[in-house]
Image (cartoon, rainbow, N blue to C red):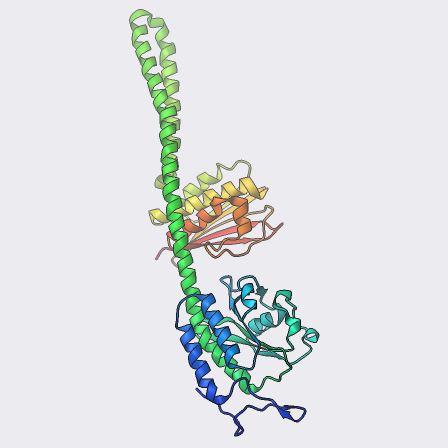
Length: 417
């Protein structure tokens, strides 16, 4: 994989005074560098060790002083420093650059290399990052790391203390390295996301089991303290009725009325207990009827409904019903909203539930494990995570759209093909 060079053996773009500008690496060492890069990206699926190895190989083999490997994070809206040569390896994971921010962000958003030979501070793209001590380095080259079909995966930067003019060959070499690294980094990111999802599922399974046990204990206590006690009382009243019928028939009506009252209360408690296990309205009316019934349980909100009358698989109906239930509870508790909109539709094999409010909203960002913002999580506790995980368990996904002062929209989509 040797790139063409002039006969002198080094790439020439210009000169500094009468001195030629030498390439980053001599041609005879180029193959060794590329083979080292290939070996480094083949050694494991972890992003940070791979990025660190690549950065070290580049600075060891070239005339550069430091190398930074910035990798697209899981939001695909910013880049995180994933690998760097010492002493900057201490900043790995701490430096995050949004698209368009600094030279790195510019390269990511434009998918084009950038070179600054000197006077970085005068370049409008340059953003000083004190932790990376940019003022100590004069020249830099920054190239996108991209490959098909992954697209942009990150940005590779090299810096030199002494002034240098990066040649066309230098940029081609860095772009080749970027392409080699991009494919492996993409696979490493996919592996990390899959591992994170597996951990989230494991935690959710543990939470579900714990919640089931808690719910069972609660229902057992409710039945013992409520239904069972009332049935015992009902038994006493019926015994009393029998006694009264024998001794004072005129008082029997009063005892029967008390017994009837206890029967009614017991039936109400039994219905509540059953509803806690599974909403019976889904059996009778389906998801649309269940959502309409749910809306009537939020008297403090004006709830507008747009519901398709279409049945779904049982497990999907239960998941969407519970998500809507959690949404309305969160709106009532946290959103300071006066109105909510619940929309349910099925189109092209996809069920879509959307719950919107006109409340205070919040700032949405990303969380690796759930895709749900930490601010949202703070506002709604376990509920926001459980909604995302409920959607995932039925093969769907949850999207949170919000900003301060503009309300919140929660969208759950599930393929039912």
